[in-house]
Length: 545
Ligand code: NAP
Image 1 (cartoon, helix red, strand yellow):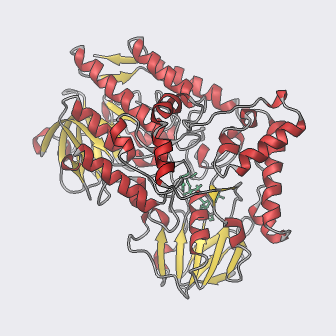
Image 2 (image 1 turned 135 degrees about the vertical axis):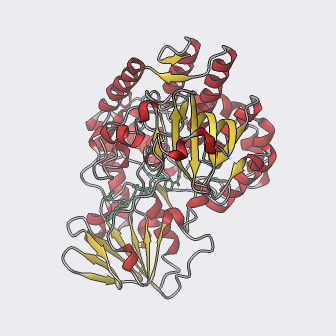
Image 3 (image 1 turned 90 degrees about the horizontal axis):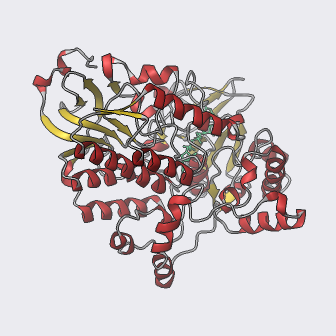
């Protein structure tokens, strides 16, 4: 890999000169490219994927689908772009989502500026010239003023099990599941991981696989999804709400259409039970994101709601103690980690062809030629292994690139010591590096991603516009500005119960990763206001020259 001073970093090798490089062509990257182009910038986008879609291109595993309602996951900046697309159901699946992103790409004529199948390997800031040199695995060396990352919160897969290469059957990660699928009929299939991804895979392939063995470590609270097909009248109805959705989504706590509507203290036990039951029966994330906000702060409230959900899960597991012990969380609170929606997931374990292996106290030791071996030596022989083992969230997409800021400082080293950003939009020491979906902004945790990504890309667009209109060329957070944001983030995060739960929300799934609540949890509306104020006040947390 090129170093900051190595030959590849010399401007002489430049293959293209632009104003902005946008990394990634998913939900954020597409909109960022559009906005910067509209501003008159020359933009080059790169994506390692074969086409647009970002997470929705890579995650083609069986059962991949939204658990945000489709009609709130769309872009809201253009009414006709919104209304000329119609979802076939409330929570559409990956193929339809990918089609939607193709529709957006074609409508905005974005493809011509995106280079697919091209991985950015390094980005070095040249302080003398105030510009970045961006290198790709295809030999590009792009000289650019701005380097904008839209590489995604959950795009660096975690590969933490030894021996994957020795397996003699078929082994896939869900994050790079083959587009043509896998033939599972009659075969012995193993799935590792019961997070949001594993759950979708398991419930979808159980009927097709000859035999399915699920390896589960940390149990997960789940909520049943209701996913009605949409008639034309349904589509018309939600489209008519465009103005209302545009006015509401950016200001709710989570960027969903609903918000916390009830105060625990104001309700009688009977009223609380009714609200929990009603939000549970909604078949959406309402119980998590629109029942009682106190669940995130008050241990007593959280205990009661957790027990409500556990009881629902136990009922569905029909008293089977092995299933209950393995699948029902006992040692962390509901909502303090991502709550997936599912369709018949728990019932899957009642099938004769499905086995559940608890690897909490008997961890996976390695993958061998024949299958998965546990620490006690038990070998589960398999023909297919599907790894749904998660991601190096928030930081992984950028730390896997050799990003160097002022004085050759390395982002991987900086974030390897401590994960700090300014509003998740920039990082001290890295002028003109602007970021989306990185830590310390609201993101996949507790946020409808499209709401957050639209706001972040729009803020970046305005920041660049303001800079240029003032005849300035660089923007970089000050050390003080960054300290203040990190302190604020910590204050908010440490007041919540999220802080106590081990999961990717804290980076604790990645050995050696510094612990910090990755997503800002002061609420999407509040975050937005703080970003807006920062710009309106003349960017006091930034040095602009
Ligand atoms: P995840 O939530 O991190 O789950 C990874 C799973 O793999 C966990 O059960 C984890 O167990 C297990 N695991 C990892 N390494 C293991 C090992 N060596 N041995 C045994 N088990 C191991 O990752 P994810 O399921 O991919 O979901 C990540 C996020 O993506 C979600 O939280 C969500 O935000 C997003 N997502 C969204 C959707 C949607 O919108 N519908 C769908 C899928 C994913 P431990 O918990 O014990 O580490």
